[in-house]
Length: 263
Image (cartoon, rainbow, N blue to C red):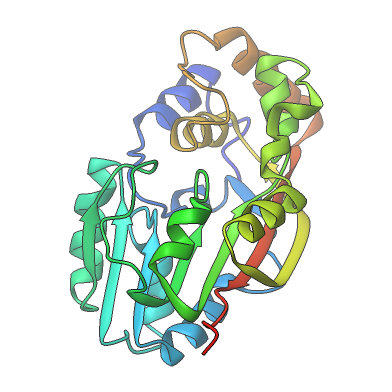
């Protein structure tokens, strides 16, 4: 069930603009947008690895929702921490993860990690803005694992290009799995698994589009309803006449290992 056609453009835009954007809980989109999930089941796979770890670190944890879901299925390691850079998410993650024994450390995404060398045997991250491979390798113990799900190249670009026009191919080439493999290997890590998928997304009303662009701020940098009102209105009219707007997300799974030191 969607609200498309039962509310005015102005009503829907106002609704999408009013929803809080902290954390990575996407339950508000139910009935308004759908996104296929990667076949590898990241959170469930992370739960297995957490069970086997003795010291874990989750990078750019958002509101802690994904890590908390994984920990609902697995006991936390004896030492467990998470990092987050956006203050509203820090507060939300701290509240959510405290019950799991996770310490949340507020630190900017591009700052050196505030942990000693070789502290963790598991480092994880879901949708990091930009993986800091050298820092990941530094804080991993020899034989430790990095396990992450990353956003790939040209993700949801059908929507991006509706608002910004055609984008050059190199616009998101730094997110390509092959580049990330090279960067991880340059930092001294060995790639154990690397898989990529493109997944269908459907937006059923313009409120979902507004909320999505407010929440995932790097899609259309500086997005405001006022600035992009013509594009929003044309997309609303298109969805009313043609049905859901279809885009495709790009995701890849990365598992890397820090080699053990030679004796």
